[in-house]
Length: 84
Image (tube, rainbow, N blue to C red):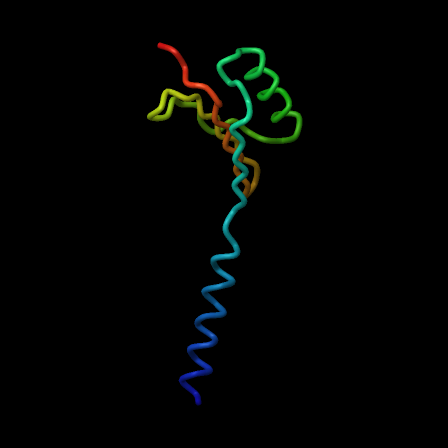
């Protein structure tokens, strides 16, 4: 009986630790290939307290922009590939 209670306590602790992860919001509906869209996204995010953490091209040549705020992360991916 004592082992079952210990196992239950361990499982509950693990569940709480997994629920403590930061929120990640993903959005791929924006045309980040348009410079005006990127500029508006930067301005709106900064006004809401988000900081630009990273900008890069993924393996499909889509623009990816990552914003951080406290323990939360927003990831924006362009809906179209960038023509190089």
